[in-house]
Image (cartoon, rainbow, N blue to C red; front, side, top):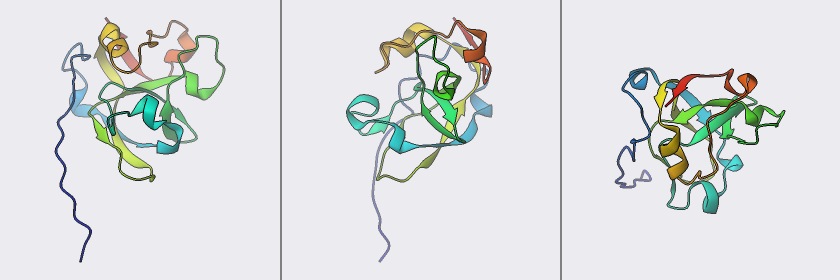
Length: 132
């Protein structure tokens, strides 16, 4: 008998989007769930829409907002486009918005109160997002 499960969830709060540009071109990336903490990054059982991420070693990890950081986790790759339920400990594919318009103040309203749009050019090298 196959393992079946039923789940209900929506696209999430996408009020952080500044326009519809780019939403049909989200690219698929693998999220390293071991880099995220349940109580911090997904307290409700899912990674919320708008979560800022970086790409390290070919997988997505939480974005490090520290402006002076020199690690790859400090280079913003984009934002998770829709809520992503976390089931188990296996890495999984997610849609990544890496170009378009984003309301930075709305991202800070998510569980990422420390998010500020990156100022340093090096931290913006991996995306084409305009923050409004």
